[in-house]
Every structure is written in structure tokens, then in C-alpha cells.
Image (cartoon, rainbow, N blue to C red; front, top):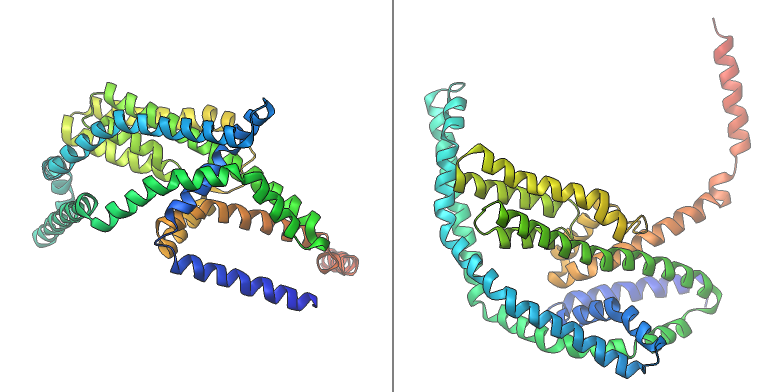
Length: 370
């Protein structure tokens, strides 16, 4: 098989994989989630193996402890979050009305620079958008609370994910060894090097960023609750979770938190206190938490992560969101490898001497001109 035929086979196989993921995206969620959890827990199993446990026993202990912890957290936190979500949905019209009243002075100020007709149109537009937002939120909550497909998917996720996690975690080393054995011999060493870089990038981002999100969620929830903000727990906790998307989570939480503070308090000082919680949290995260936990090993630009998450969600739904960061890590590592190979190749360096001499000659002629 020639090099061109091998490249064609790899490209065809890659597109077949994309088509399979797209077609099966409705049933892949438990398996992708189980794979992600197994990857997350594999270092803990390796440590137990070094202490003398068998792989099966280590897998049983780690899997049971992990999901027991999740169930415990869910039992204690889920009712509180659910109650706050329901109460928040009920108070959305009141909050919008309070925000509309708070914005009345600004509307009056803007109206001074426009005629009465334009000001009336602006108020009608704001009112229309407010009604659309209320309607959209109500429909979304209705779908989340009563959607049969969503409940079925959640049930499959809850039941199948621990099973998939256990078997993948138990056979993780064997799966890696088989994949290593299947590599083409001529490129095996290069592929191993790039796979190690991908693993380093994913470990630094996924494991590190997950811990950062949990810490931020706890900080924001505690800070907003102490500041007296209604629904501070749910706003803070969700802000921490969405912080998995760089900058977007904090910005969204800041807008929601300050908007609720304006509607609830109607005074400047409490609003500034709520806003300061997000500012302090971002400062601590950017200068202490993230550098300490993740460091400089990620190698994934925030804009690239945001694009990957949006593209994965648009193409493959929630499965695409789960696959976005691993795919972004692979593409990032391969891009850096191809770029370094290009810079070291004759395609980049050929003719540099001639080009350099030509440029020097042009520079001499330019200097000799009057």
C-alpha cells in the first residue's frame, strides 16, 4: 500500500467515524460520559495498584467511592437547587418588572435625545423582548421538567454510566496496550509522542479545570449568599460549573447576579457588593487557583476552547460538548506538530539565502537613493 493509499484510508476512516457519531449521537451520551469518568479516575486506580491492589479491586473501590460521593452530593444539594430553580422561575416576571422600573430613568435620559415617537418605539421594543424572554424561559423550564425524552436520557445516563465506567476503567491499561499494538510500525514512535502530549493537555485541562470549577462554584455560592442575594446558591454554583468555558461562565454569572441584585435591592451598595464577589473570584481564579492547579501545561487557547464547545454542541448536541475538549486537544497538538515539521522542512527554509541576499541588495539600493 502506497503512502497516498494509506492517507486516503485514514481520511475515509475519519469521516466514517464522524458520520457514525452524528447518527448515533442520541445513544452515545452514557458511553462518552463513562469514558470521560474512567479517564478522570484512571490515575487513582494506578495508585491503588501500586499499593498492592488488583486492577479489579482498585476499579471497584474507586468507582464505588466516586459515584457514592456523587449520590451523596446530589441528595443534599439537588433539593435545594431544585427549589431555588422553581422559585427563581416564578419570580422572573417580577424581576423583569423591577429591572424595567430601574431602567426608566435611563430611558427618560435617552428619550431627551430622540423624539417622542422613537422613545415610544424603544419602550415597546424593550417590553416585547422582556415578554419573549419570559416566554422562552417558561418553555425551557417546561421542557426540562416534563420532557419524556429528557427523563429517559437522564435515566439511561444514571444507570449506564457507572457500568460503562467500571468496565472501561478495569480494562483501561489493556485497551491502551491494544491501541499501541495496532499502531503502524513506521509511525508508532511519533504517534506515541503526540498521544502523550494530548494526554498531558487533557489531564491538565479536564482534571484541573473540573477542580477549579468546583472551587469557584463553592466560592461564588458562599459569597453571594453572604451578600444577601436571593438564589445566591444556584447562581454561584452554576457560575462555577459554566466556568468550564473560559471567561463565559464568569461573565454570564456576573450579568445574572448583578441583574438580580438591581431587581432585589434597588440600591447601589448591595449591587456593588454582589459585583465585587465576581471580581474577587475572577482575581483569585486567574492569579492563584488556575496557575496552581493547572499551570502552563494546557496549551489550549480560550478562544479555541469556546469555538470547540459551540461547534461540538451545534453538530452533535451534548455528546459534542463532551467530545469538544478532547478533540480540541488532539487538533491543537497535531497542529503544533505539523507547524514544527513545516518549520524544520525544506519547504520553509529553501531559498532563504537567496531571499536574504536579494533583500540586502534592495536595502543597499534604497539607501543609495537621494
